[in-house]
Image (cartoon, rainbow, N blue to C red):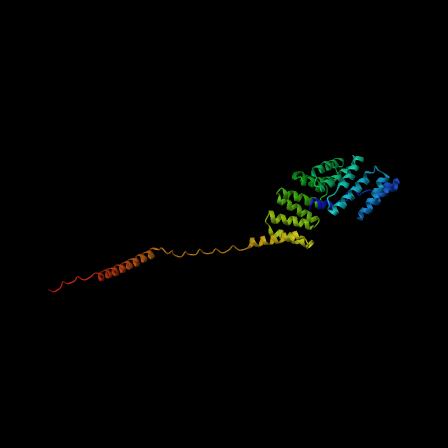
Length: 314
């Protein structure tokens, strides 16, 4: 699973956490609209949720939570549309940070959005701040791991996902991401072990495909790779890329198991024309021909001579 795919799935989860009891206790209409917006967002009624957050901000322009929540909805809508236009979300998160610079939520959400835009260096600044303000928040650590993967900082990424796993040993995604890091470091056995653990916690066709790819491409274990590709296709039979990978692995296995081709015996070259025997025969024939010509020429020469005329009888 790619970074953008994973983050788009969780795009509105982090910010929408305001307890409904808060509005009842304070009578704050801003909180009422905020809570209503959260409820609508969880029902994927995004436009209606934005309207509620607009009302919450109008009632209380200093509500950092309303800005964070509205920004998270903007981000979710853009992620769904795959248009990569997150400026309105960034603007809301920045406003939330201005209002509440000691609240980690704005940094966390802006950092996540920057990761989705592949602005990894800027994202790290925000995620480091979020982790500083709330050290026990594993979401900041996990998102920081994504940014470190984007920058190719494998050791730091592995450390962050290890921290997340230690905090939650059932975090399948953290095992999968660390497996990807290990594979990138050519630590293939460690990568396989993490993919195994991720699949043990949560069978996922993407992880089966990743493990299969590791088996086939790096370890040349085609049998296990084929089994993983087939398992992924059982869950998601329309995955064209995995179908192609499976065909490649099957062809590679067939080539590996094919018996060696029998050696073709070298053909004995036919004797050339100029052998000693042929040369001898040719010389003998030539001598015979010369002899015949010599005899013929002598005979022809004798018949051409005029006989000596006898003198007249006197």
